[in-house]
Amino acid sequence: MIAITFALATESSAFLRRVGKKTSKSHNGVTTVCGWIKNKEIVILHTGVGEKICRYRLENLLQETGFTFLIGSGFAGAVREDLQVGDLILAENFSDPQLLSVAQRILKNRAVHTAKLFTSKTIIDSLPERSAMAQRYRAAAVDMETEIIANACLARGIPLLSLRVISDTSTENLPAPPNVLFDVKKQKTSFLKLSLYLLKHPNANRLFRFARQIRFARENLADSLITLLQSELVNPQGAAVSKPPTK
Image (cartoon, rainbow, N blue to C red; front, side, top):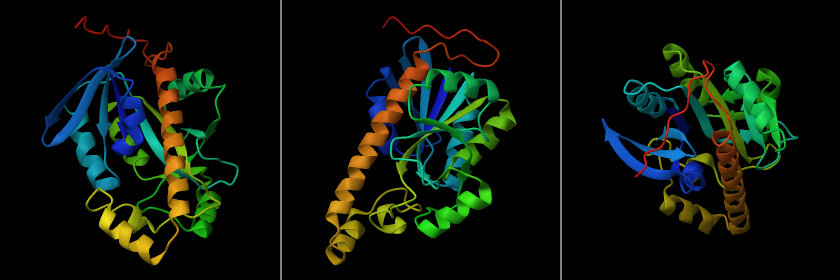
């Protein structure tokens, strides 16, 4: 069985539409979705944004089931200027070397970069801060969960492949302040707060453009994950994949 994580449903919706025989279950208040891609059984978890909720939800997932490997997926913000929206990042500093090598080969015809990913404790919007981060950590992109996921996998001996898609670049600020776009404490966007912000700062065109970016990134990530899962990607021990139920 393969685990796949996303931070939010916003990141996973295009992928979930293509998963067969879906069922969902809850354990300790954490919901997972089970399904099949080709002959591979998968479990999808939304970790939430940030360290605290990500660690809690992962603990619930990983203590219950043994996984052959885990794909840590979702969006990332570029901190390197050559990265564009929709580009893929294979995180070399978090991924199992064998899984990384196989994924590089399978995705070689896509806009994929093998590079370092940095996990931040906060949402990074400042362009100077992103530039400084690129230099300090030699990172290409930033997210808020992968390091937590990597540590949890390492503690349990579960191989990890980190695959992220660029949702915003290092050359343009987000269309609204991070705390307006997403409330980390509540794990959702306050549309009232966003509406009030837009009334005071009429930049709807930027917001619509950002929404298009998100849709494009989400579809490209889904296509890439399907390509990986329909390939001969196996765990490093070469374990055979499962067979889907007939009904």
